[in-house]
Amino acid sequence: MLEIHNLSSGYGDAMVLRDFSCQIDTGKVTALMGRNGMGKTTLVKTIMGLIRAKSGRIMFDGTAIEKQPTHQISRNGMGYVPQGREIFADFTVTENLRLSLLGHEGGNVLTLQQIYDWFPILKERAEQRAGTFSGGQQQILAIARSLIGGPKMLLLDEPTEGIQPSIVHEIGVQLKRIAHETGLSILIVEQNVDMVRTLADEVLFMENGAIQERCDINAMRDDDSLLHRYLSV
Amino acid sequence: MSEFIPIILDVSSYILILVLVALGLMIVFGMMGVINMAHGELFMIGAYVMVAAQSVGLPFLAGVILAPIVVGFLGLLIETALIRHIYLRPLDTILATWGLSIALKQLVVLTFGPESHSVPLPIDGSLELGTFSYPLYRLILMATSVLLIGGTFWLFTRTNFGLMARAVIARPDTAATLGIDTRRMYRWSFVIGTALAGLAGALVAPIISVDPQMGLGYLVPGFLSILVGGAGPLAGVLVGGTVIGGVNNLLAIWISPVAAMITVYIIAILIIRLKPEGLMGGRRAK
Image (cartoon, rainbow over all chains, first blue to last red; front, side, top):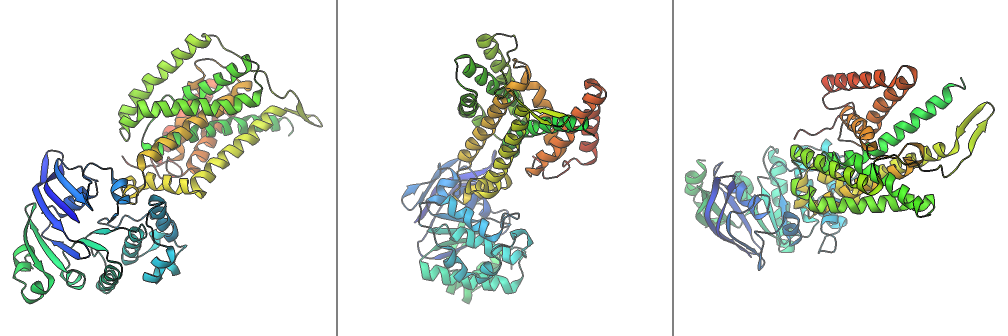
C-alpha cells in the first residue's frame, strides 16, 4: 500500500535519508523504532510532503505522492499526527475536529458521533478550548482530528512523548481497537516499548537512515535482543 | 459641549477609515507575512474607480460596488504574478510590493493625470440637531465602516472560511496536513484584503481629494496601527487604529499636523519598545 523506493530526503544539503526503500502493508500496525537522529521523523514528514523528497518515489495506494502538496496527500487518505501534537490551542475541541472535516470536504469523512463514541472525553469537553487540555487529552484530540478525515493510513510521530503512562496505555488499546474495527493501516514512530507492544503487529528497526531489521511483534516479545541493539534499552 | 461633538465625530470617522485600511493590511501581513507596500495604492485605485465611474455617468452606488470588484481582481492578478512567489519572506515582499506601488502610481498618473480629482458628495444634506450640524454622508460613511469592520470580524471568527484562515495563520503546516489548501487560503485572503482597500478608497473619495499620492497618507498610519495594536488578533487593529488615528487627528486639530505626527511616532516607538508584541499581543516571531 505504501511503497517507498530509493528515497533521498533531508534538510538543505544535509541528507538524512539516502536511497531509502521500504514497504508498509495494508491493514496492519507497523512500528518504526530506532534511536534519535536516525531519520524516523524525516521519513514521516517526507511522506506527508512537509519535507520535499530530493529523489526517489513514494507510492501510496497506487499513486505517486512525492511531488504532491501536503493537503493533497492528506486528501488522498494519509492521516498525520505530528510530534508535539500541534493542536490548535485557541480553538475548541469541535473547531479542531471541524477543521479536519472542512479539509476533507467531499471525501470519505467520519461523523462527530463516531469520534465521540471512540473518545467520550472529547464529547464531554466539546466546547472547551483545546489549549486547556492535558498532554494526554491533546494527544487524543490530535488523533481524533486526523481520524475524522477518514484516512486509509495514519502516521503517528512519537504519540507517547510527554504523556503519563496510564493514558499512553489507554491510547494504545483504543487505537488497536479502531485499527481492527476499520481496517485502518497505521505507521507509528515510537521509542516507548510498551506502546509498541500494545499496538503494533510488526516492527521495523531503523538506523543511519535505513531499515536494518524487520520482525513480527511476537518475535520481539520473546526476544528483546533487537531492542538492545537498536534502542540500547 | 456641542463644539466637541463634531471633533469627536471627525476623529471617529478617521479612525474607522484607518481601521478599514489597516484590516486589509493586517489580514495579508498576519496571515502570509507579506508586508504589502502597495496597499495604499490599492486604496487609491479604489478611489479612482469611483472617479472613473462618475465620469461615465454611473451612480455613486455603482462605484461602491465596482471598486472592490476591480481592486479585488487586481489583487488576484498581483497574487498570481508576484506575491505567490514570495510568501513568508517579509523583506522580499517589501521590495517587490514597493516596486509595485511605484508602478501602480505611475499607471494612474498616465491614465488620469497627476492632478487631483474630486468626487461630489452623493448625499448633500446635514444632520441638524439644535445648534449641532454634521454632514449626513460622513455619518453614513461611519456606519458603513462599522458594518464592514464588523463583517470582516464575522467572516474571520464565525464562518468556516474564518476557521480555516485562522488555522492557516496559527499553524500553516498542520492545517495542510488536515487537507486544507493553504495556498488557496492565502490567495483568497489576499483578494479580500485588497478588495477591502478598494472599497475603502471608493467610500472615502467624496470627502478627500483623490490624487496619485493619497495612498501613502493611509499606508503609514495603517502600518503603525498594526505595529502598535499587534498583528495576531483582529482586535489589535481596532486598538492600534484608535490610538494612532485618535492621537493623530486630535492633535492635528488642537496643535498642528506636524506636532501630531511627531507625537504619533513617539507614542508608537514607546509602545513598540515597551510592548514589542503590540498592545493586544499576538505578533508571531518569524
